[in-house]
Image (cartoon, rainbow, N blue to C red; front, side, top):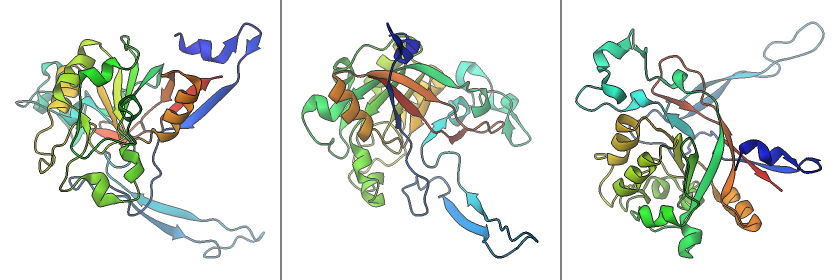
Length: 272
């Protein structure tokens, strides 16, 4: 599928459906214990300052980590034995607290074919169980990705967004991509992999975030960016109604110079 084919048919422009794949940023939302949580407060309220013509303004302060909410991991997020993807020494890449290479600012806007791996729908369940792995067989149930595609893996875990302890899987673990599936995706040379969980990969019960082999495989070894904390429920319903798993993926992370990650507002554009 050529992504541009979504915008036209034989008689001219085609109708499209745009689905927001980002979770809302709000105080109290789930966030990894290893990253700063999202904080928000009004700094100026209407009426604090009144102009001569009666107009007032209001604005806020927001504080969050680069890996909070729906976000993309830069290649600088992971190093192995002091080296980033491609063998770049961390000491050479880091300058004045920012990464001169492998930062999120090096990620171009994505306008790519998207493929949804809808694991619960394929297995005939509402959502995956805590700590359940997503393997190669699950990936094979979706259209085979081509080099440069964006692959999104739905586990149904976004249904727990309003229950932070359950969403984070503090005791029972979180479903996600296992190492074998990570290698399969790397071999297919996709542009990015996303999921609806806090860390994208399989987190077994009691495992916490102590071991992240898929991050190592995709970020450090293959140079493939990750997108975490997505919501894929509406996308699942709309694609299933059309009998397809393909769409146009559009998204770009915030252009934060030298950051290891940043918020992203990914969109799925679905043809009629």
